[in-house]
Amino acid sequence: MSDITRFGVSLNSELLKKFDTLNEAKGYKTRSEAIRDLIREELVTQEWADKEHETVGVFSLVYDHHQSELSRILNHIQHENLDIIVSSTHIHVDHRNCLEVIILRGSSEKIRQITNKLSSTRGVKHGKLIMTSTGSKLP
Ligand code: NI
Image (cartoon, rainbow, N blue to C red; front, side, top):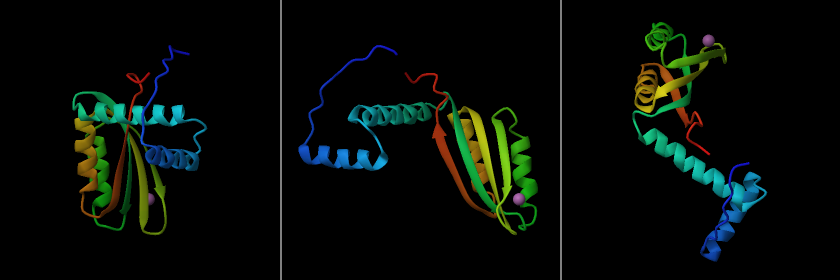
């Protein structure tokens, strides 16, 4: 394990109570674990703020495949971005609807451009990007 530093945190007791209640509901055993995750979340957000930084994202997309030309357009956007799209999985949810999960790796700016383009394509019902990290800069 890497070097561990202990530090004290001064907090309003009401805020601490809410924090503990939240952590218990989430299943954290200690405040340290919860604080570590909050810090990592903030660091991932910072990575995404840097447009050039290479990062990874998971994008889910729900659409109606009966919508004319939609499947072809979505497929075309993905084929144009082979350097960024690492993997995709397609599930036929029901008679009309498809769910696609796409994993992207590249600059945060490029990932946002592609996922915005996919989301805004006519006929797409829901697009959601989870911005995560390669982990290379996270201790
Ligand atoms: Ni399908």
